[in-house]
Image 1 (tube, rainbow, N blue to C red):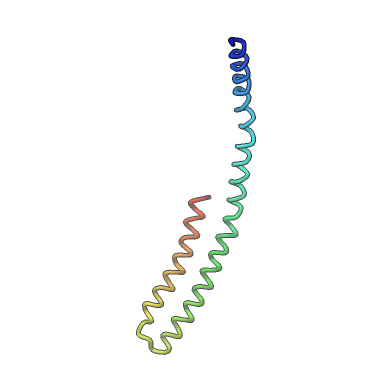
Image 2 (cartoon, helix red, strand yellow):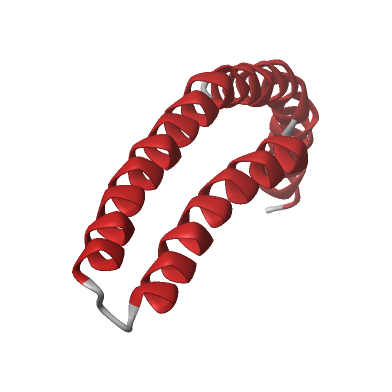
Length: 101
């Protein structure tokens, strides 16, 4: 019984000593590759958000102009909401870019 315990202990020590060696290389390389891939998408994503903000601004400008031309008393509320949406898109894109890069 003692021989079996010694063999088991020897095998456990042998396997336990090589496990950290196998896990060190690929984990770090994988994390670095994932970080590089995610950061490479920030520039196109930021440009896309800016383009969406420009389109939303143009649509909002047309809607506000139509309300103003028709004499709608709710024009200032509509202008504030569209302007706020455009500002939010631009600020959100800038903050996300500066936070993650």
